[in-house]
Image (cartoon, rainbow, N blue to C red; front, side, top):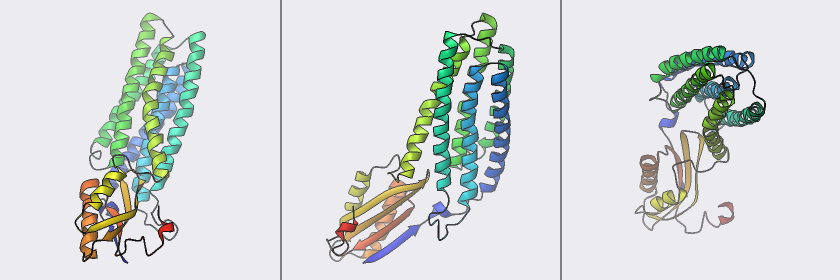
Amino acid sequence: MEHDHASEAGHSHDHTAGANAKMLTWALCLTATYLVAEVIGGFVFNSLALLSDAAHMLTDVAALVIALMAIKLGRKSADDKRTFGYRRFEILAAAFNAVLLFCIAVYVFVEAIKRFNAPQEVQSWGMMIVAAIGLVVNLISMRLLTAGKDASFNVKGAYLEVWADMIGSVGVILGALAIKFTGFTWIDPIVAVGIGLWVLPRTWILLRDTTNVLLEGVPAGLTLGDIRSEIAGLPDVAGLHDLHVWSTSNDEISCTVHVVLRAGADGDSTRTAVQAMLRDKHRIKHSTVQTERSEAPCDGQAHLHQ
């Protein structure tokens, strides 16, 4: 048997990491401070819409924390206990964030039903002032993250979270104005439910994707059948088995496969061809390809394969 292992740009040093970490830290401090202020404002001014928007703001804080974790933990080398390194902390934090958001959404929906049945007075001016401050914080955070959003998947994710929350702040401001000029306090729970419905689909996608990573499922956008067919279609490949494709984080994909060589084929050139195809067509930069001369999987060890 012949083996080969390839690990490329996924582990290279990112010269922009320091600058990205600095901008993320500033954005995190601003957003976390406002999150606390919005929660306090929601209770003080009796606004469910502010509390619902605070739940959305929590996703911003979580996204910024996750991005910082990815940068800082990504610098930490793999060791004898963590052979894949520490990047999966990013996925664990994201999964926890999604579960927490579902719990908050349930609270907001239950409270909204109560307020529809028994409307409560809302201090619209206070609600509007807090939301306006939130809009300014979002715009500043977006400006801080603009420079790094095209160079980092994590920074881009945090940027999109802040952008989405800006929409929530605008919704709260419009709701406060509507309450001020109409006196209809039931607008507040409607805005709260609207923000919740805006957040939940994205929260479900986050939970779905993080669960897939934790279960070592095939990453989104890839099809195992297509990869299998493309490997099998290479000139010197007679067959393949034990194909696995998974990711340890949202942007680091790995693949292992056993390839059976055709008679007279060269193992080194075949491995190179398989790895080049995986890298160029499927963005799989971390691959381990094992070549075999026998049609029987690993000399009769078929029970070890799936």
